[in-house]
Every structure is written in structure tokens, then in C-alpha cells.
Image (tube, rainbow, N blue to C red; front, side, top):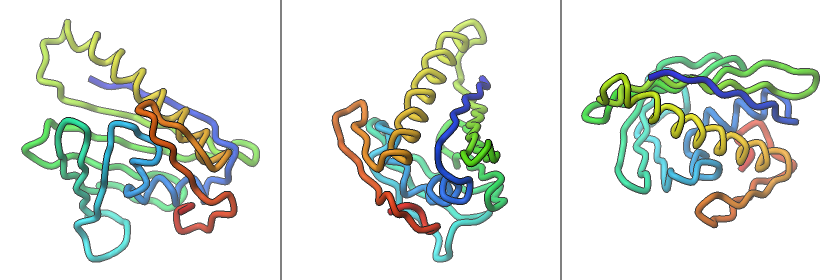
Length: 160
């Protein structure tokens, strides 16, 4: 299954990229993700691996693409189902157009994938709206009731 969502965020590309490419920030805008830790000694880049605890399971993934201020992609590691997420960053006036592309092996028959794709794509779209709110206002209430904040005068190190 594949789908794409986009959002325009009223922040410069460099800030949005720094925040997204630090995957430890994901629980601040994705309610389904509880905790993310880096399993690599070095900073973010191709080959960096992460462990992600979600509400229902745990996943490990690795960064497969990393072009500062342009693109970052990750792919899950076995035994998780194959998922690739690619974030693309484009200047849009003084804002950022963020595009989030997913390619996911659901293991479902093709006719059921359409239903699953619509639900997952909708949840991803909701999470991107929460990301936009967080980066533009410095505060967001996630779907599960958690309130997350970031500094409005964030540095390029990830708005934390």
C-alpha cells in the first residue's frame, strides 16, 4: 500500500527538517508513538538506527536517506512489517511544504488494503496537522490528550 500526505508549515525548511530528522521528537506530534531512542552512537544520518515504542508494539528502523533540508527516509527492520516513510522538504514562500510518503506491506489481500490505506492515511494526515500546530504555536494537544511543547525560539538542533 502507498499513500502521500502534505502540509504547509509556517516555519523555515531548516527548522522543520531539524525537528523531523531527530526522530526522538516523533512522540511530540504522533500520538501513537510513545518513545523513540537512538541506537546509534553518532548523530542523525544514513545508517542511524532507532527503537520506537508505540501504543501496541515496538519497532526498530534505520535511516535510509538523509539530505539536509531536502529529504529524510526510514525503513523498519525485521521482524516488523516492511514500512518506508520518506519526508520531503520544499521551500514554499518563507514556509515549508512537508510531504510524507508511505510504502507499507500490510500483509492484507489487495481488496482490504484500500480500507486500511484510507484509515492509515487519515491518521497520518491528522498527525501532520498536529505537527504543524506544534511547530507554528509551540504547543499541541495530541489525540490521546497528551500536551506537548517546543520552544518558539528554537535552534536548528531540533526545536527542543
